[in-house]
Length: 394
Ligand code: PMP
Ligand code: GLU
Image (cartoon, rainbow, N blue to C red; front, top):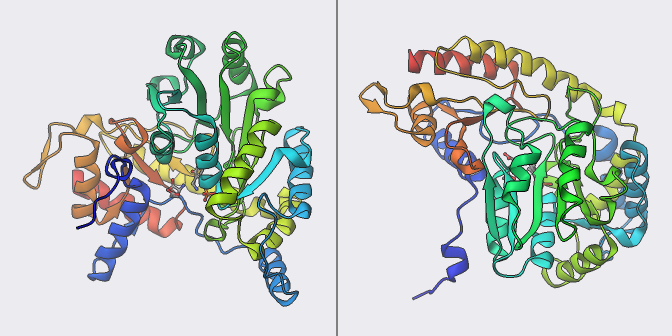
């Protein structure tokens, strides 16, 4: 008999990946499922990046890399941070990992002791809470709602801080709400944080380029915060490279060194071919991948228009990323086709079964009133999905 650890028994399965697996399974059974559950660009990786990978294979890049990444890649990351974010890092502050997800896991494992609290403004990205728990930290959820554009206010932050608070984790542009914190809003949060110098901030900026609101602001840009911010980024979203698995951090040297040590015992470093390709990706001007952002922008207009046309859907206007996070509480307590909907999970399940559209319940993101819909899908699929949802709830 296998006895599993309490750690894994207490862990939730990633809801985004679980829903994508469910959609795949239903498709294999012959069902015509439209998948709007996974946050994954539906573009191919651009040719100039693929070419760099092919070149790396032919150049015999096949050995272990330095644990924290090739020096040339770290240099490309330093140049990118300077170019796009006006942030200065030296090589000892950069660690390349197997996706931003591993970057986040490294940070949690090297920063948290049992019982340390991590403030998570809700809705937060699905894996934050479980990564914190794996590291024996305690997630502290700060609830927000559609009324405040799903953003945490400085007062809420202040109220959530206790002597046990070790970190604050957030993403901007946010997965799942699409909300983007302006520089002024970040400054107002920083004004609270400067009074609590023991708190480390994890600023997840993986959607930085998928921003329809204007300038992207980074918490580490404030000189009084720089020494305690870990900036997380990666290539999955901006370059349509989800499966290549490369993420990275710019961090205070102590944290970066510790992440390097942790990763040295877990993966030995990220894939060598992917690392070579990412040098080319990051060295390119961001305008080279702007066509994807333009396309996401027009899909955003389309999906908002179609969802707002469905009575009961209350949509936020996302300024970034490629998700809408509509409030669906208007459907709670109602019965459709003999099925009573009591919460967002029931609603997501109902539209999976009766509209053949896969979304993700907001519970997975710490908000039980909404569902997350990814519009990283073709316009035909978006139109068809909204039509089916409308019919299923009419
Ligand atoms: N952070 C956020 C906010 C995300 O949406 C994702 C999903 N890709 C990740 C981190 C992890 O990205 P990856 O591991 O693919 O780099
Ligand atoms: N980040 C994507 C999402 O939120 C990919 C899935 C995952 O990594 O969990 O859908």
